[in-house]
Image (cartoon, rainbow, N blue to C red; front, side, top):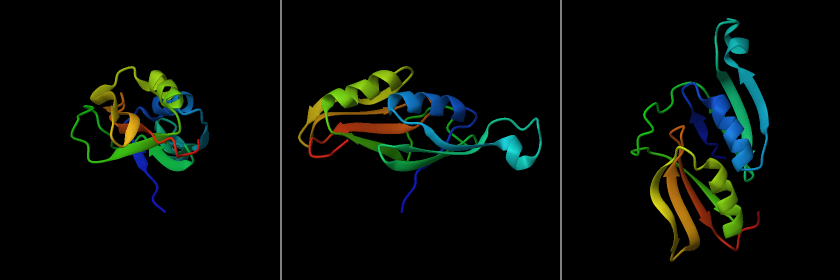
Length: 133
């Protein structure tokens, strides 16, 4: 099993709220840093998990990409069954993104885009009409 673990450098709670809306999901579990360290002044999220399109994703406020640079070495690929579903999620997440490849039709998908969200996570949204969900 391969589980993506995303680091948000202080923006994990914001990312969870946005991803819950954009991907029509809810956080499965959340543990705050102060509950791990015992220090009431320790802010942020120490560990959280949610499922995005059936995939378990772990998140926290450690590390992260402060500059939202485009030279990231990991990409989250989210495959939608219809253009409409892709566009709905894209509409909710697009504020503050850096577009790498705009929405377009390519030989392997009727609609695909690659972008970096406002938290520095690189995403590829694509449609595969043979996929359920």
